[in-house]
Image (cartoon, rainbow, N blue to C red; front, top):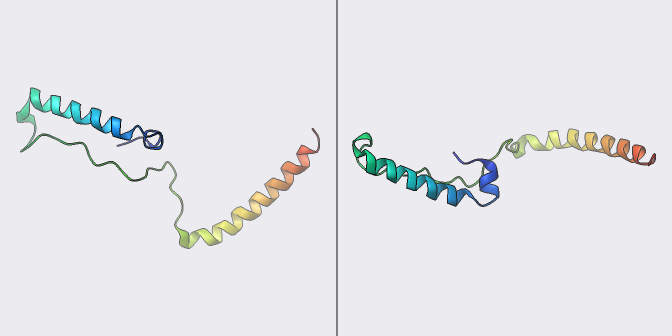
Length: 84
């Protein structure tokens, strides 16, 4: 598992290489613990999300709700900004 921050900061390949080294060391100490071959870390994901985006089919109806909410928030913030 790769933390989202590691993938976004470009540290995922370093973490994967370090994990590969740890697995190789574990295999060297006790090869009988592993079946058939030296263990490999899982492939890196293309993307990781804490909150994945919603599918596009439902996004259009929710987008309308989000837009109205943003507009009301925006007008409220503009109103509050006049008190500076």
